[in-house]
Length: 164
Image 1 (tube, rainbow, N blue to C red):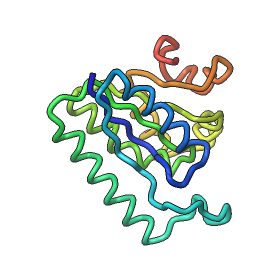
Image 2: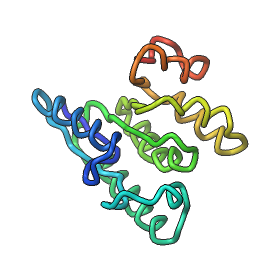
Image 3: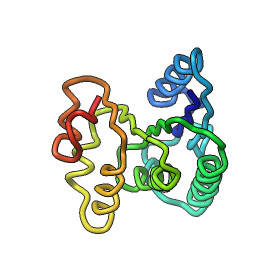
Image 4: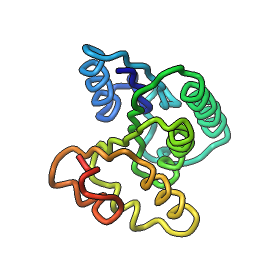
């Protein structure tokens, strides 16, 4: 199986990057796994800076998105795309082009939420951002959560059989 993993990978070493590396290492034993690293900074950012948009990070993100979309479009045969999006609305939206490109190519794609904030983010988002998030969720093959107690984050947003 050929898998493309989209998400942040170390360095720096933090909870999400380490988790993605562990999943990569496990999958790469029996499958061919390609990476698309969405991390835009190799340094751990100051908490006050997190979530703030600046021109430099916006440009880095745009370049990342273009490269990732091209990977999805140009890889000959991908069986699945694993996406580990962030849990803030703006950061989640950065992963939408990967999801839509996978849908165009008819490649099953799933998101893996590393934490329990997604539902709170979803419920507090409105307008055009909420509509885009809704549309992205409808196109997913599935959503992966850290445990059964976090299934609620996607209840009502997608069929329960697609929540793992």
